[in-house]
Length: 314
Ligand code: GUN
Image (cartoon, rainbow, N blue to C red; front, side):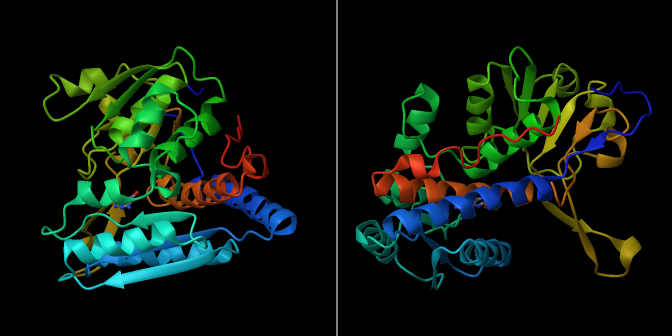
């Protein structure tokens, strides 16, 4: 691990690590096809016209196609009733060509998110948001499908630090169900000493300075400053925030993370960039979960064993 104090941190290449996982996914897909003629199937459901969600959903469907999956995108108007969303989920649950179902969040206000997530069959819940999968992750029960961004974040930490994270201090800033809580569970499973910090945490900078692994998942642009980072730490920036960039021209924007990258990268030992860090890993892990779900449904989990397992570059 590099010492801090002016040296540049190693930039963790999320695109490269994600490309390695996609290769594993394609190999598993080929094994499923040649042994059992099973083609993994992913259904992505978008309700409404949220522009960021439209981009995410298009990218997920395109990657599924690239992986040789059966890929379906269901785009419903914002006015769709909750009953109609639930009916679609129910028909996808029953469809043998579909092994993974993803309902893009957020949903319109009149559709109860918890009700929809509960309606997805846990074995097709490739987001890992169903309470059954949340429970499996937290208890260590077998068969969990693990949320994609958290799983990708831990793989990136291992790519920088090596596969053994035992005993390291991990601080997760943010307590969402989508990232903060599950990434904390995964780091605990890796034998880290885990702190979940949030908006009410007292003296957040000094809590962050304890971290050997600092995971930023707050959704606030560049909130985590260089001085909050322990010299040599591994910083995983989950934030994707679009901010005004007048230096690029009037009306232009750019993507930034939750970490002030220019400052933090002179202190950290390794850091993920935004874009090109955690983002590509989320989609890669979604593909890994889909091929895993397909192999389990076919009664041959061995055909997808090890897909999405950590690859250490350290
Ligand atoms: N919205 C933001 N992140 C996610 C995600 O990982 N899955 C889904 N379904 N919706 C999201």
